[in-house]
Image 1 (cartoon, one colour):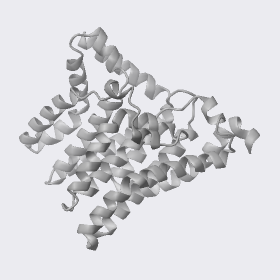
Image 2 (image 1 turned 180 degrees about the vertical axis):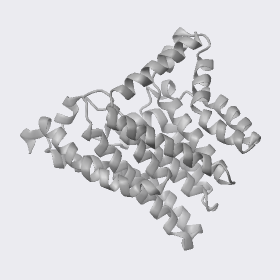
Image 3 (image 1 turned 90 degrees about the vertical axis):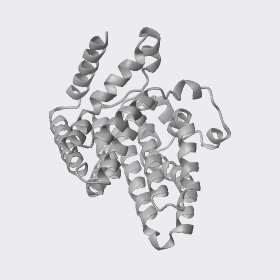
Image 4 (image 1 turned 45 degrees about the vertical axis):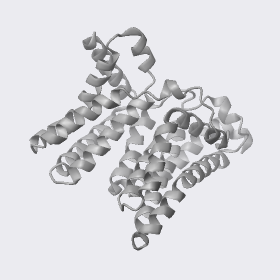
Length: 315
């Protein structure tokens, strides 16, 4: 049974990569190869190996939170958690290879243990019917945030509180800002139905700037208390959260423009998913930031061209 599920997963991956085109496929493979090289180098020394491991596990955690097939697996397979565990362990193979190569057995055991815990995390179904005060504060036009927060509300609150009350540790707020900055990346992974775009009754430029403005406003509201708390204890290091906030905001803008550059009504675009990896890498490795800026400009014009087909009457 598990073997059959894994075969289905590989077929899904093959179909997804087949749909992004040859050039994007080559680019994606090159990017993954570069990331594997960076991972190999970073795990060679402490504490970078802990940081790389933590980032990898956060990505696995976000996959677990946002995947939509948990209910299907739960109802059709008695050992569905074992299926999840095997899938995640397969995704962790590059990390395991690096850790074993450098004889970091403690981290290997820790990763396996934490992955076991991640498998048992299931916020989505429990929060599906929530309509908390925090969610009601989010404007209706930011439906991506409403949907995303519904899935990750408890995690966002937990990280935010931890960051605020441990801000006297110099690494606490930067780590929490980083984690909170990852959440919005998954909010924009699927194109909304076209009628939702038309309901704004805005021209293309106005629509795009509205989306960017709301994203920056919501993330700023989330981040400002943490940044202030950091400055209270570490004023001489004021530039750390400020630069991090700018980098994260840049990646968020890029993700929005990528979404609409490859917009497909009520579906996920293979092209958007491939290029979104660069936005995620910009958060992890600032070397990608100049590329993100250049691609953001390109995708802005591509988004305009793509959306003009639907919003031309409002221009």
